[in-house]
Length: 150
Ligand code: HEC
Image (cartoon, rainbow, N blue to C red; front, side, top):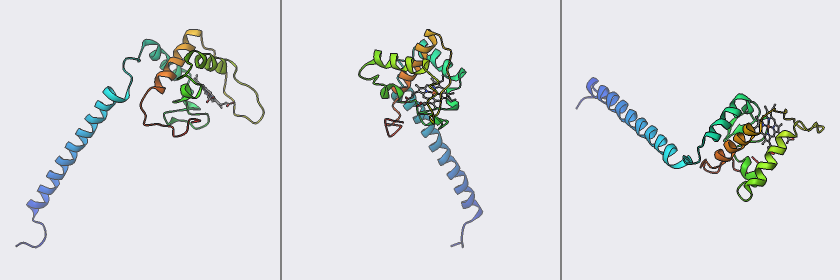
């Protein structure tokens, strides 16, 4: 019996291990993709308006202050569940009106409170933005954020 590893055994472990983990990584990547496409994402609800809303979100850099599904800045509330927070699950029309009114009323100028700037959005942009927030709320993000207040 030889002492320790032979060169050939070390090489086989290296190649075998690399192959094993490469295959594992590929399988996990495929699974994540499959899960995202078929399970966690509301494909039917992904309308042109949601897409426009995402552009409005990006062009106005809302993420510089807000987080969405945990990603972004922590200056202002999480917006991944803002649709739920505004009662959108029970009263979609009310939530849409309240969100529009909220954004149109900024900044409030309330002393000691962080301020949100005014964004000059058309009705179409505002509706699309809210469609985007509503759609984001429908993503199964395993109950993130843990608290409804964000
Ligand atoms: C400069 C920072 C900043 C930017 C940029 C910003 N916000 Fe805000 N936003 C805030 C702050 C601060 C609050 C909380 C203000 C308060 O509670 O009085 C807020 C609150 C909100 C709320 C209400 C959240 C709640 O839970 O009540 C919504 C909706 C919102 N923002 C949407 C947006 C959207 C959409 C954009 C991009 C078009 C945007 N914000 C860009 C700072 C920002």
